[in-house]
Image (cartoon, rainbow, N blue to C red; front, side, top):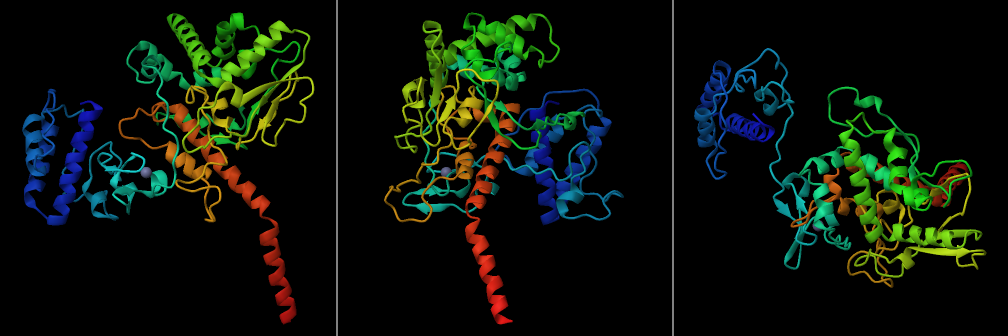
Length: 465
Ligand SMILES: [Zn+2]
């Protein structure tokens, strides 16, 4: 019985048992009881024909009942409505009735994403959508776009060969997806701080990404210190004739033990990613310009300025050009550096932390998720239909709203983000720490206000005495 069939079967049994509890219908009880007995006594295996979705629940159960002789070792089922010594203190009817071995007793099937937000096209489950709001002819929801207030540009589609890498359609894409975090690290410009705790993944449970300590992204200089190997962004500049082998060897230590034939597959994928990022990604293009400059003028000390301010509206525009994201500085900066700019030095031995409020903070860490070098979160994205002169109290998209919008599955759109498995877990943990950091900064900036209030209260108490 494969996972799809098993899910369908669980749904049918659980739905039927819950209906029975409410209506105390004896028909369904008998059906499930008979079905359980038959499963335990029967042997052999046949394919399960999917029942028609419009079919009545009871008929659906009978349909499966008559067509489902399975091995007893495949799944053991007891009568979900009969009493059991293990269920002496049931919390609710579902717990008492769901007695399918191997399935968590709190198992809930929410069905499909049946609710569509008409403002942002997000597909939501009924239980998470909650109450929608009607604005004109459109119904919108809070979870995805804050009732239509959050508006972000649509993601620009990548070519089909790139998308296919994320679909697990062949051995190459399966290998790529298995090592997705490694490939992302291979091409990222920044390293992640914090310590990844792998001890939690010792059993057979699904992978968990756990980060300890403070999270931050750090970036090195354009060139490695003398005698040191190039890392992260330096791989875009240093000895690029052998770039693929540098990337392969830099990250091969972290690679799981693999057969020798996967080495050639690995090189092939690295070469493909390198070519596609060279052609599309504006951050990569900026670093390549710096490399060309080094090659032409070997004795000139060049710095790279990653620009932190954008002139265009963040609601409709997130695809900057190479000249909008970075600029080369030769010699003195001439007073052009803004507060949020990142200056990447020519050659130093230390790393600098990057502000999470910089528009390139996320694309620098996740080049595979932002293949064009699109902007991540920006401080100046206004809510829909808000102008800069508006007197409304809350006009700017917060970081939490930004991530909530990004993490939705949308109609007629392939979400790269939702298909990257372990890298998605890393992205969510990273996003959570960004939100927390922003909140802590806010509290830090507001210190005077709460402290004044406390002080006033103390004064009043003293005066009262
Ligand atoms: Zn929405």
